[in-house]
Length: 252
Length: 376
View (cartoon, one colour):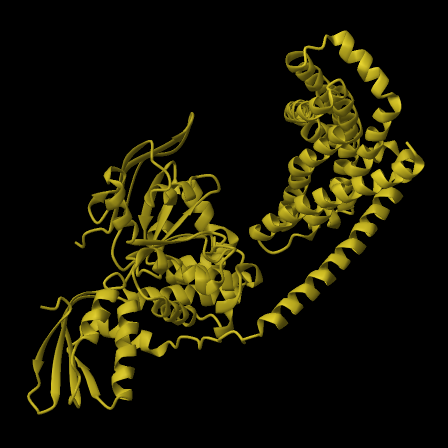
């Protein structure tokens, strides 16, 4: 059995009296793509934010490579932070920087590389995520939705993280753009050998690129392959995987 | 001893074997480059790079290795890679397929030419701003009579909200500023007037400057900074968030929903705040006269009545709606111009404040000339 890259144990998140997660356990293993689904307001984003340390859970532990991220001092935390890259839902590119500058940002902050090397590395990544060469000099406001996602992916990958967190990577993209973005993720993940944890509502992504699917129901997580979830009798899962759109996909 | 490779002279003459080792990653890349660049290459014709001892090999390292091989080939050294682990080899093969886009060097422009271009652009921008401003004013004025007949469309709640934001919440700071400025004016004036034995005229100085100029000017500049900026930032953010477009698609004019209430609110607030500023200025003047010149309030009031009549008060107050209109129009107009990014909202906010303060001062100068010519 492979050692998990990320272990979430007994996670509890409460906002006032509202309990979002109640004793949630969850693992992410190396080299797998895990998709997270769940109804609106079930705390998918809260879970992601707890894992990457943007939000301190009410109780429970989040471990990456065996280290509890909430018990690290600042310096150690900076080191584990390098292990993940995050692609936010709207890209969250810095609007005052060009695409190249966005990608180069962490290289400038975290390494002592010479300016021209940083520049070349950043420009290589423009090509790596399939952006046209002239996109590098553009500002985020001049990019289309799909290009923003690609630029944000390049930025998230710039320090070669071991795990990539994606919050609804294909939301707001048309079918063709979504499909090609999915393929880009699958392909990139395969040759880099990294893990991906993605929140998604895109059934296409779930079926085509996810190795495992995690479902957030009743404040806990159920993981499994698609087939396992199809057999699950829980009403929400029944609804989710057996509604008209889903049936259309599984019949495939 | 190097951390990232071990070398041995190759079996053939003029050959070098490098066995790469350790963590070849983006963080160690500067050190790797330093070590590799120190390898003496004189007389080397052939090079073998072994990768079996590598622990880490990330995309940045792969890119560097690819770059290195290209460099070696260019200087006539045949280099080959052997023994790389499968996953490293895979990364290298993919990365070597990506080409960094060629950097386009910005065309060099003569500084004088650049200056001329910038000046021209700015002039055109200023001209466009003027036209837009006049258009805005027209739209505002044209909108007023329509609403007098349709009071329902006056958006009473919105106007009251903005009067609270722009007017009532500004009272403390404006009161404090007017008080201090009058106090300082008195302080500076008294010691000059003392030389002519005319300290009693300090009261004239304070009263006239407060009523005619300082009261309204301080209020206007304060509101330009406080509300002009807020208008630009609020409307600008709504514009970025497509809220302005949403209004438009619902058939509600953004001008009517966003701009009019704000301008009406500031046109109502600024004169009222001016009255408060005047009162506080006179109070500041009195406190100064009392504490430094030992005037009783009877003395102060009688001198004040001799120095100024209601006309002085009206002169100051008559400027207030005009200043308010300038601040409101510039703030809202800049907000609606925002496009693209959060940075642009910031830039438009700055422009709104700078332009409205500038326009207020220009308008004040014009008023001065008019009032002087009219002998008021």
